[in-house]
Length: 421
Ligand code: GUN
Ligand code: FE
View 1 (cartoon, rainbow, N blue to C red):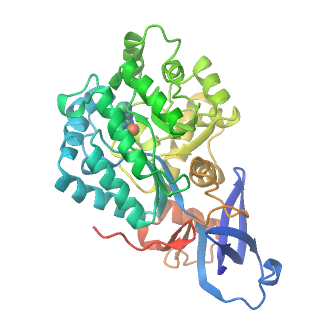
View 2: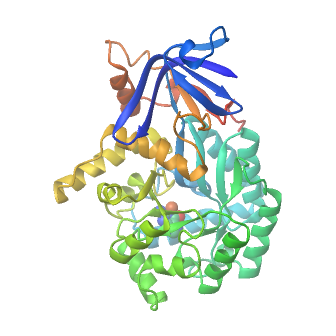
């Protein structure tokens, strides 16, 4: 049993923070046993305590949608919309991941940067390349950080160097599944058809079979951009909506599924998502940078859809999920000007990034008993120059802080050291 002392802040529900000033948290076997305001309230009198003094202790961040092989393009190439952006900037970069030397250099930096910003779990797109995808999974495993990593399936509307046959896709996936097969391992494969325009019906069918045969989660993109949606209609005229294409192949909630963007999802598509428990990865920076639009997150929450936040590097430019919370709030305020739906609150965006997104990885993202202890210790003394309340201290860290304020990181109870680049 381990006991930590700090100011403890987390969200059980989206509408309010739980705040325990000078609180104690007991952790056993990687899971939270309880949170209290004294050792006796936890039944732990006399136990040894690790005291983080005036620091804040919060759940670690979860990134529900990020492209590791777009790391080099972070912060550049923002002048095109989705389809030409993919063709001109993204596909040429991803082709480089056939080269293991290049992949190792970039992937090491990528994992280190996730660590810097306190992201302990992520849903990651790699590329079609099995070898470099395996390397990325090994790097996460060495680091001790949680990740669902997808070898990306694609076989149409893409350059030759980024296309493979259905047989190659299945074989590569099965090799990774055999190596990373432990069901409660921190690093696991996720079935990853890139998006409908990149996958023939045969490829989508094979992906659905992989997900069901090996009981694996699924990730892809959905209703991000109007030209993309028009292209899907042209390619799959029999489908009643974009989401219906995935649904027909068992890739829409038959196994736990996260779909990035969903900006333009409506009607039947939203109903299907609700019914099947499909989770939305909201990526506000990406949606701004590649001009995709504003996702109606307030509506999604009101309707009971599951939502989390994603950085979507390199459509998004920022890997720091705290900064994504700020963008999600600001975009919701632009949306409010137009549609008069209430904008997102601080507790809501914090909950989206922690407990809500964390639910895709198991019992992750809260400090309720039984939750895995994924946590960050925040030393904000330079920001707290004027006796701010604990909630204002957290808000200032979210808006003004950066990785230098994160002084300890825990994933499943273990303290995570800086990964070697
Ligand atoms: N749709 C298909 N591929 C991608 C990608 O790499 N990034 C984004 N933002 N959307 C996509
Ligand atoms: Fe994406």
